Each structure stands twice: as C-alpha cells, then as structure tokens.
Length: 336
Ligand code: AHM
Ligand code: MG
Image (cartoon, rainbow, N blue to C red; front, side, top):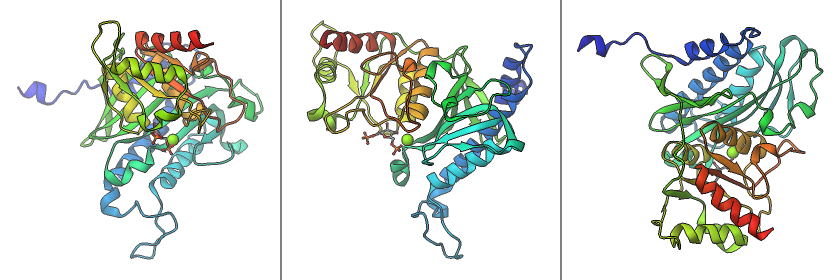
C-alpha cells in the first residue's frame, strides 16, 4: 500500500557513511567528504556511460563532433571527472590513476590525508557493445603532517582503509568496504541517490562458477591448467562448474561476490605477471573479497600482502569463494 510505495527511511550512501564515521570519535568528517566526491564522480560517469551511444561520446579521443567540439573517449573523460572530484574534495594528497603514467601530487592548498588509487573506467574495450563496465578505487590514509611521497601509494593492499567499485550495468551499483564488511548500493535514477540494497554482502563459502579467459590456456602454468581442468572434470564426485566470463573485471568480480565461485587472471607464458594491475584492480577487489569472507591469492601469497614497487605493476590473481581459492592455493603449494 501507499506507505510502502513511498518509503522515506531509505539508507542513502551519505547517511550510511556518516553513520559509520560516527562510530569513530577521532573522525573529522574527512572520509565522508572524500566518499561523497567519489560517489559524485560515479554518478557523472554513469550518466555519460548511459548516453554513450546517443551522444557519440565513444568516438576516438581527439575526434571532433558536429559542433566542432572535441570528443573525448569515455575513459579519458572519466579520468578527468575523478581527478577533478578528488582534488576538489580537499581531502587527497596523492592520486594514482590507470590513465596517468605518473602519480598526481595534489597542490598544498588543496591537500588532505588520503591517497586514492583508481581505474576510472575499467573494461573500456566493452563500451561499444554495451557490456557492463566500472570504476575501481582503493584508499590509503597518510599520517598527519607527512609530506606525501610515492611510497605512500606503494603500500601493501592490507594497509588500505577502504576500497570499492561502481558498476555501470543494467543498474548502477556501488559496492564498498571500509574494513568492516561489504555493502552494496544501487542508484535510484529518479532520486540521484545510491540506496543501500545489499547490506553486509557475504560470498558463498564455495561456488559453482569459474571465470577466466580460456583463450589463454595454451600459455598457462601447471597449477592454473590443472585447476581449470578440475572445474570441468572434477575427480572428487562434485559437479562440474559453469563458466562465466564477461571480460570486464568489475562485472566478473561483482557476480563472483554475489553468487560465489572463482575469478582468475593467471600469469601465462606471454604475460608472466598476468594482466591486472596491483594497485587499482588487484588490491581493491582483494580487499572486498576478504571483507566478504572470501580469499584472494597471487599464485605465491595472499594478494593483500604484496608490496608493489611500481604504481602500474601487474600481478596474477585468483579470487573468490574461500573453499575454491583454497583449492588453487593447494595446487600452487604442491608445485613449489
Ligand atoms: P583494461 O584496463 O584495458 O580495460 O583491461 C582490464 C580488463 C579487465 O576488466 C578484465 O578482467 C580483463 O581486462 C579482461 O582481459 P582479457 O580480455 O585478456 O580477458
Ligand atoms: Mg583496467
């Protein structure tokens, strides 16, 4: 009835983050401001992604449209949106973006305590066919008064204070963890607000899906090859797993988080360190997986223990349901 049709007690992301912050007496509100700027960036990119086909935003960077205005590729546009949103928040000191070769050091007058690493529009090769794409971010906190240096961004993932992603899919979904569980919010386009729709996401302990680019199989190492073979032809009487691979990390990880299973981007002979980037792909997704009760492994160690040496470093990654990741860990341990 009408009381249900107009619920006014919705938990918006702003309320949620403020509630969380109020649990910490030392909170100064900086984090809430930072998150609201990231959320603003996501809304902007969501609108641009939705209009991409119409607005011909997807042309090559540098092309001009009928008005003679320069068209920007969506990933270039998204990067500008996030850099501006983050710098103007006044709460950041170092930004690392997949789109920028070098880290950005925020000028002193606009400087704050947080270092933000992000991939503004991951999976952009999928834009032209309307497949889900997303933004991924991770946040580190610098010590007060500390002069920001690149080392601030080259910390292991376990030092992150928060991580998340926004998926631009059939709906726009924002998933975040501040280190006490994982929560998911869905954009209500009529309100322009993200509403808490997936409180306390827990990944199933074991899944029925594996997700990998099998086209690379001929170049895989032994443990990865053995694992995928086991997914298809289990020897322990368990049913074979289904294969789902979108080729867009945010969408593949989102499904893994909600339905369970495992997502792999292993090393192979052609790319010995895999494809995905440590700082703004591997770390944030690993942080979320662990917070949801799953695991993430690099083939050698817990992903969040990795200490990156370069901002654009890559790493193999195996993440998902706890039991599924245990199996691949055992295969690598047997090899070692
Ligand atoms: P991108 O940063 O160039 O978009 O590449 C990252 C994407 C991920 O979203 C996805 O998991 C992976 O590349 C897919 O790679 P592949 O096409 O090799 O399977
Ligand atoms: Mg990417």
